[in-house]
Image 1 (cartoon, rainbow, N blue to C red):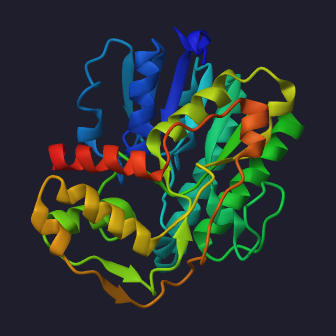
Image 2: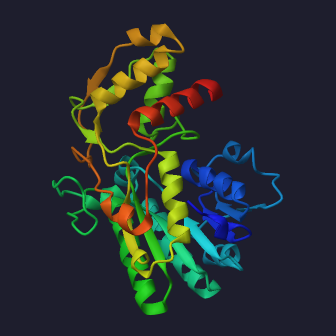
Image 3: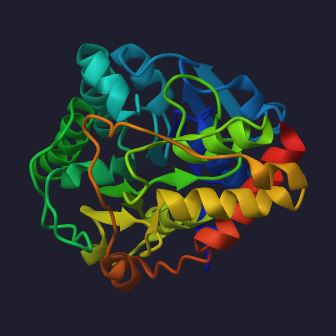
Length: 328
């Protein structure tokens, strides 16, 4: 894949100190882009930027996307925007829908407006598989969605609607990437809203029993970070007009249930510490707002963006487990 057009390009990554954002910043710097990170560090972590903070092509703006003036300053002179800044987590949005809406809807609208006013070439943003809501059809196809099941899902769908309007009304080219359960290096295992994979990894490393919500048969299209990086880069360089102003499933096109996931994690961690294989698994109630199953069709991304995910669940988990073992 040829990403040479990104060399010397000025690219703003919002939420650039977060899990996905910081990985994107590193890869863009490797491609010799000029990277600006905008983050308020509410969920992003400074240690995620430690390896690049002194890079000559890296610039950090500490600020909040809920402030339009900050967004305008960050977008000035930028060629492209990767908008990763958001408040994730379905449970957090159920507990505090107001803040989730302020960040994910008002903040998103601020960034679109600032991007439009700055004449940015393309606005690529993190959408979400939560947009599929109560649709039970598998695999998930981009143009067939259900009703949202959480405030978070509503905010991410509203993002897609705003992006569409900004293209039609103002000519701002956008691409939305519906992320499916992304995991990998730098994903925070701590906190009340930690994602399942890093949370289970740290618990198993501490010989604590992970708690599966429900009977463990709920399944997800777990997607390794390097697949997500590939999709973002492809969205930046896409030249075919049919590829623009679309949303794409960003996934691997396969699903794993939680029982299978914990078995794999125990197996891979046991290679480092045999006692982890003896840790038991507990079960709790199903979580409000959760969908039973998620599986993406990635055909549209393959056809229009030449997407070719390199990491299936097993290879991705091995890489993630190795990173957590070496860094925690």
